[in-house]
Image (tube, rainbow, N blue to C red; front, side, top):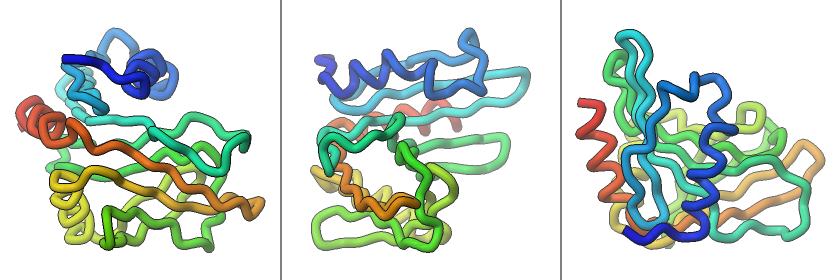
Length: 169
């Protein structure tokens, strides 16, 4: 499969962004267009995730850390397709970050430099929409008041999630 520029950055940065996981236990399983699938195994615990980096980030020139979108599964905890976003800055926790695909918007909540979905049904609906969509937009606001908009390609997400689910049954 052809690896995009964004995905090349993901693969190169994976060990840096997942600092809590021992490098020898983290394995790149496959790349699917703009998404990569990783598996982490330690002892009897296993985590699988699809990860992507934004193809466009606004505003330009803002000082931010790493920015990634994850869809993760932990079979030992019976967690499947959990959404989390590393936004790259401390978020205004009183703000209402959001995800959107086309006209559909999904509410998130901020926690430090990450965003999550509180409602499992909303999370399931977002994952379904991701499989059908072409672009995912994440909007947030920093503690300093800077509004951001990150656009992710959804090319390869269906195949990536199929692999995540196969790896973490």
